[in-house]
Length: 397
Image (cartoon, rainbow, N blue to C red; front, side, top):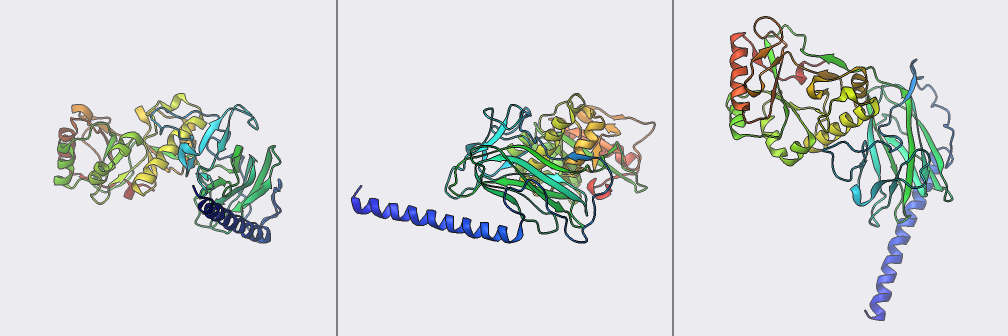
């Protein structure tokens, strides 16, 4: 390489770094003007006239806050459970050296000059409620904040932690229509790696989700639900299309991401939707709440990314659930934990109450090689009872 070319490249790199640092300086100046002092460990006063936090125990609503919970089976390789990192496994990894507490922490190494290494998660919240977010961080120019609160809130940040761990804290009050916020942590351009541990979003937990096997209604409707997604047949798709059946699909993330166009086609009838069925199809009743929350929240995020709508219902694998499942689902923004009143899978015709199908019944089926005939048999059973298939989400309250 010629001396002249080397000099030009060096000048370009210097100019680019200067631009980034200028942007950083401007950002710091702006935040300084509107935020509490950098590295503050104590939240500032609530805005004048802000609603007070409702009564009830304060809990940590963050998913996998200490980065101690391993990824479930069938999850994305290299993913950080509970978190969505913009750079993926090329930037973000759980490490086991020099954690703030416990055995693990998150370490992010931005891979390009244009990356801040952001990692984020969606947290279910209540409207008009005050929450405190905090995290222990290590590195230079690390930021912690929340968006979607319904009210402006500046992030907490630090210029440097001096090689050790430092706690960042910010407080926000949600607006009247806020039911979830996006909690984020990130570094800054060309400022090197940073680490995060012991994240908290402290506030009142949402009320537990409702458990249901049917939907209360006097309308003469029944709801067809189809689980899993491993066997996708053109015959089943044809039955759905020919009869214009509204289908509520509960696919696992792995088959859904393998063939997303199939699931878009089979849920194209108005009233159809794609809901949450966990990441790994584990018996959640055997898992602690924290692991159940990862199973439900990570599947919610996968469905939202792939199909553009956020699930509001969760189908527990094997119909196995407990009180922790209802709370974990609520912490993921899920309103209903849904089982069923009838099973027409794999050639079955089981109705778990006397007589014919009834208004509001939920029918279980699976994406299998028998689904085409299962759907026809379920449709005949609905016809015999004077019922029509309808869109489930339209009836959930």
